[in-house]
Length: 420
Image (cartoon, rainbow, N blue to C red; front, side, top):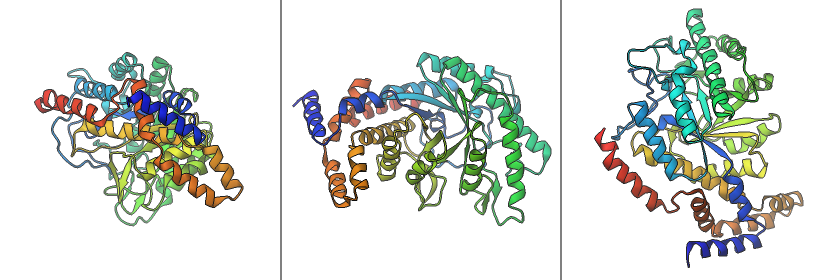
């Protein structure tokens, strides 16, 4: 059988289960997913030469790391050719493109320092998301930024956040697509603090000052992201889950919560938190990663929790309410492959969720027909999803077979990455 014949057969089988695969494919093609630039250079950025600090760590030294904006853009273009679906670009402030001999500290960043990224985005018809960079900088004092008791330090980082609001507005205006701007810091303490509330009150005030910078909330979408702990701040994190959720709930007309599924205790599942937050927040944002024991930022795979997160977005018809972005950085493997595997895995999870008779399952639950629900949920696991996935990739102009796109990655590594 040809691939087209296999798809037609799969479409018929799914139809018997109550699933319209054509509708699933067409809907998914319209859903943007943010591709994070920092996988390409191990979160190094272009505005400093120092080490990665502030609660973040990459492991590995695989050859081919992008060292210039041009190289990073070339790598991103290679990934875009290999993945299906609608790509959006996600940048950190440390990826400002400065001219030779030019310097602009983070509190002085301007839209002009990101004009090259806007040109790149327009070339590929991409929206842009953005992140202030509150780490890997000499003005991080005693591990603190927005919560620092030193007012000069705190003022520097507040001004950085405000500058990022202005840059986010620039991105939205230039692309015509809303820009999600995420606020996350690694502020905290390695051992037990004497004052847990004071830093959080300063953090609250700092974020409120950042959000006082004028912006159109329809086009600029600030987020607050929590974390349970970080490297060097194991005992106490200022921006905890309770703090971030409470802040977002108190400022629903100015910002939204962002959940990174690596930023919680190991037994907590963000898939369960998604519908909980959708009960109260008009919009939420996600950073999709794969933690192993801690926030290890492994490449996203087509695994159980990835599938469950996608299910909750789809079954709650929340595509218009959930902003989806990838966030991981593995320096031990080919970085192009890491990007590609993660993006394709999340696309697979969303497509499989769309190829599920969710309404029928919900009715079974409401009627307490739990035995039948279990049987039907198991039944669909062996449906010919691979043939629907192959059809989706073909319609998006992306390779369907892993061997096909991986051969292109190997060729790119030999011809480009190994020569850097």
